[in-house]
Image 1 (spheres, helix red, strand yellow):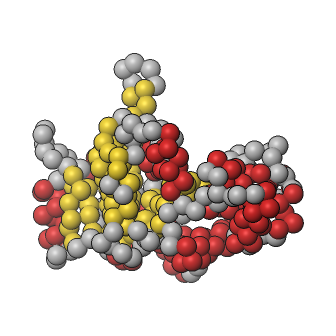
Image 2: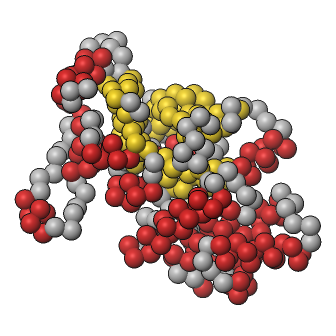
Image 3: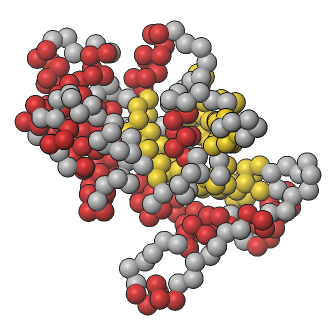
Length: 313
């Protein structure tokens, strides 16, 4: 991972939804993190924690309520010309959770994959266009004969491969994978994740991998961020987070991961998380603090000192 080259910077990002006065849902609430070129940052948390909204706000499917998203130093949400927007859309792509809903059922696979090629004029002739489609299909483990079929003729895993080929068609640098395996059979999930890892090695891709399956996130990610109710509560290298979780919510999530050991499972006790354990004085600052090199926890100054004491840092 080339830590010297920062590809994406998310600074104090907020995305709030008005659901009728005076109610407001703070789906993403003051989230900050960086992603370096060539790495995979995993973003995990239970359903409704704001991880997918974070991804969609980064790529401008949602407008940011506040904060900044910088891609190669340029503000993603700033005012842009049509040519600047096209270039941004080419460099950053998204793979969606539902591989069927994200594909137009009336379009053939060749046209679905070539849509981005057509928009960005990446093929000089119909022949070159089809050659690119065939190459992309083979890259994701499908056959060129699949180009003339429709989405309903494929399995869920095959449709997700088509979605990946579609994202790759415009030669992006950065891909947001929004729960790309959660709608697939367990037997197919590993195949899709291995494909994403292979493509990353071959094409130098950078990923934001959003999921709730902690064991799969550990397998693919270099670093992992944990979200809870719109907040990023912990961020650390993958191995460090699993070996030494410091936020009580992260500890709760990890305690729920099943292991293929019947004896362990019979005696395993899940650690529950009660947010009421955090007692803060009025005006007390709660922010992401680096408790160990590269390991950040959302905490107050008092909690920070206690964590360092407990973990002998």
